[in-house]
Each structure stands twice: as structure tokens, then as C-alpha cells.
Length: 327
Image (tube, rainbow, N blue to C red; front, side, top):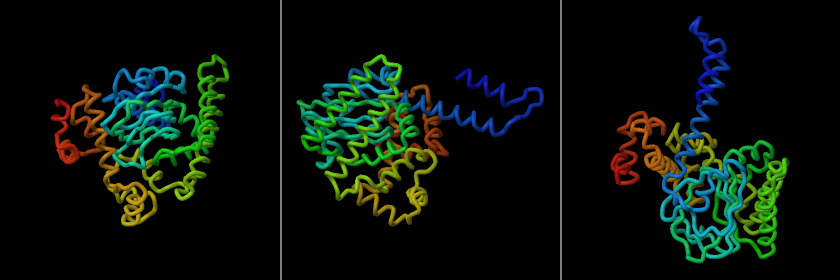
């Protein structure tokens, strides 16, 4: 970070003249610094309420360094009974047992199910059975962004913001074979490992997309649902706006129609999704960033006044931010 600030002073600001030499370069560097700070904050925020002994949490450093890690014998999500936001792309293959998500039977993860959790996706695991065993393909946010740019069609993974996909026996064995190849390559010391992993992940994501279309034709899994577009916008703009009408405009729809479709697709209103997302972000920051005051967190989340943030947080949780932090 110090080097970036030094670069900012050397290349943009002329101390003798007291002015900026290149406005576009200044803007570019400021944006890079903001993105860097946001990613750093998100990374520190992610571990807020997770079990530190969970395999996925213990392997965070390895996931960031390698980009892709296959983790076997997962007995539970990193947090159960508490809503959280996923930090990486996770492809979860369930061998046995059940995870019940957000109290909706259709959202349970069971044997032969595959679930894809996108970075920044809301996860609501309510309970798990003692016999649960899953394999997780963990893909770091940075590696996933590389996939999105190198292979644009992998962006279709966002269509998996939906209940898990139950596979046939043949489909399930094909997915296991693909995951095993990813496991082998991820452990190799080949100089081409990163490129090979990118190819294999694209194949796996493409397979899962085809299986979802085949097994759930009524859902039109290959099409871009309104909720997928809304959720992507929410991730990018939740600090800018918490108004449903803003997201309706971004999707070129009337607020009434937008709200009706989101409710039909997900069972929750768009306003509920916005409030839930912002609340989880706020909780994570209050838990993990003890060096941030409540006022700093409120400004980071886009609230113009701390009092507005306090009212919002108490309405959603029953506690003020200070009470939540001291609980």
C-alpha cells in the first residue's frame, strides 16, 4: 500500500507546481487503490463468524496462493445457523447427508446434489445432518475473475444462484471424474498448472450448466434470470443505493414489475434481499474490524449519517451497532 501511495505522489502530483499533471492517470490510480482496499477489507471481513477449525477456513491462505483447492470430507458449512456471504467461488458436491438452507425444503443440499456458491452470494445454512460429507472445489476470487475475463462464458455460473441441482447417477460420476482431475492438477508442480486448472474449471462449469438445463427445463437455467442480474447489481451498488427503484431502473423495468418478478423467482421481495445483504455486510464489519468505529463502518456502507445506519441496523437486528458489537 505504501508503494502505491508513493507511486501516486511521484506520477500524478507535482509538488513544485502544486497541481496534478495527468487527471486520467490520477483517476486510474485512485480506482486501483480503492479496489485494493475494498478487496483487503472483504478478505479481513470474511472470517468474522466462521469456525476457525473448519477445513475451508484453515485453508484460506492456500486457496489464495494456489487459486484452486479441492477439499474432501467437509462435514458442515463454515457457519451453521447464521447467514453469511461467501468469499470465494465454491462448487459443493454432496456425497451423503443433508444441508437445509433458509428453511426452504427445495433449497436443501442432499446426496448427488451439486451447489455452486458465487463470490459475495448470501448463504443461509439452517441445519445439517451428522452424516454430511461434501467435497468443495474452492476457487479464489482472484482466480475466478481471471476465468471471467479469459473465458467470458464462465460468467454463466451466476445462473447457479438458485437451489442445488440434483444429478443422475451418470451425471454425478462425470462430475466426480472432473473434480478428481482438478484435484490431481491442483497438486501438481507443473508450470502450466494455472492454465490447466482454468480449462478444467470451465469444462466443469459448462457440464453443470448443461445438467441443470437438462434436469430442470422449466427453470430455463441457461437464460439470465432477473434475480441473477439484480444480485450482481446489488453486489456492486449496495453502498451506493438501498432503494428498490434504483435496481429496477438499472434493469430497465418498472418498480412494480421488477418487484413482482424477484418475489416470484426467489420467494423474497427485492427490498428484503437488499436489507439482508447490507445487514450481513454490517455484521461482518462490526465483528471483524474492531479498528473501525461505528461511524466509519456506516460511511463505508454508504450511510450519510451514523444515526441512519443505527436506525437501519436496529430495525433489521433488534440491536444497535454498538450493542451488537458488545454482545
